[in-house]
Image 1 (tube, chains in turn brown, purple):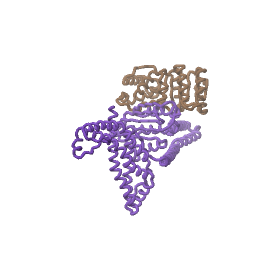
Image 2: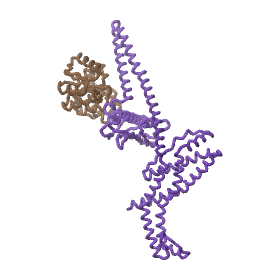
Image 3: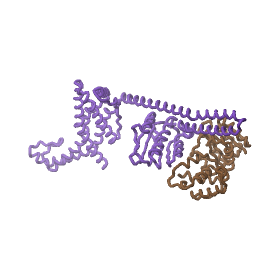
Image 4: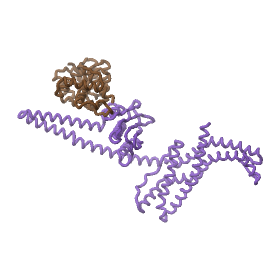
Length: 215
Length: 421
């Protein structure tokens, strides 16, 4: 799988390249600044881009802006954004176009190589990978009379994983239950929240996030 | 026409109030002060002078606030801060000395003199013009006759009234006075306040002295709070990330020793090391957020406050109307942390269910207001968090106003002068 990588710190960039190559990804470009990233995205036609939010030369949100611009130019271009901090504000901007193929993770998530690579593959396949912190922040808001309050603890757990972008199979594996049990939970969740039932992983995420953000 | 008449009548009433207060309260206070100061050599004055001079200040401050209420005229307060109140003879001597050394005290007395003479005359003219015109009409209505019969010699300005026709002339003249009064009365009141301003507002020297005092005070606060901040960061690093990294290093060392003897235990230790490093990262992240929030660095104040609002457990509506360009980093940071503190208060102490934040920029200042529907009752002072906030804003010449009746809602407004670039 062809990957463009943008990360300004040499140690992290090098580490990511090694990790991804170990999992048989093909790094077509590993760049360290915004302008270089823009060029690499335009020229090398990657299957997925992994981008640090903060890049030179401005050291502001250069990477995020580059990624958003690239997605405007090529809708649905899979982008996984990495950062030292996660903000719902940025998550919203990434999800705003509703096209899927978006990931937004803390850099720490790289610690668990398996899960990280899984997230990269999910994003490349048009799915979503939202950092658990974004989701837990959303869930922690107390919205009055929210139907979320009517969910069982198990259903909440399932919804949290669903909002991160996991498929039923992955959720089943993590919670050590059968996939059929998860399917039952998800349809309960959709029913309780009044959301349209969907099998498409990305659509499920968007529905849940849109629901949570309404608060 | 109606508004002009109203303004003229209102000014007449105000002129009456001003002149009577100058002639009654003003003269009384001035005399009292003179006597009290004269009694200082025999000792009694030392005790009587401070309360008397403070009464003078209260009276002068009343005039300053009237200037603001009536004319929107700002007259700054020039008084130096007084020494802390102490009981006994020494306290009284100290207080008396401080009051007498303050040039503002003597300017207050000058103002009392000017106000009871020129000020009173100017103010009195306003009602006098109106009342005199009424007198003209009253004469014409027939009152002239008994007066003329009783002895005559009745004059209305330059008209010697001896008949109904001359009395009518007086009435016409009276209307003229009324028109004149309605026209010039507001200007007369303004003139009275102009006299007050010339003596009650600080001289350039006083203004500078006050400014220096304020700067010394805010610099002191700034140094204090930045030292406290550094101490907090040091402690957090020492007890947090640093300790965890030591633990990681130790675990890795043990793993090195165990890896061949006991691979299972080595694996468990590796997992623990990874956990510790993740915790260290989380702690560093929180610390960084407390020093300079990343969104602020990346996006500026508007988006940083939006991101902050999204983090809170209650719905916050953020309305940002900032022109392009950013304020200086220290101002942005101060504004951000101020908003953060007020929001935290609203959630924690006021138990708010909804919060509104407004950010705007106008006439050279950043304006921020935070309103919540919580239980209210917040106030500045008494060592509350809001006083600390006020002090920190003071470093930037920023000001804080709190309106928080018991039962809510609470509205905290902050203004920080700054330029955008």
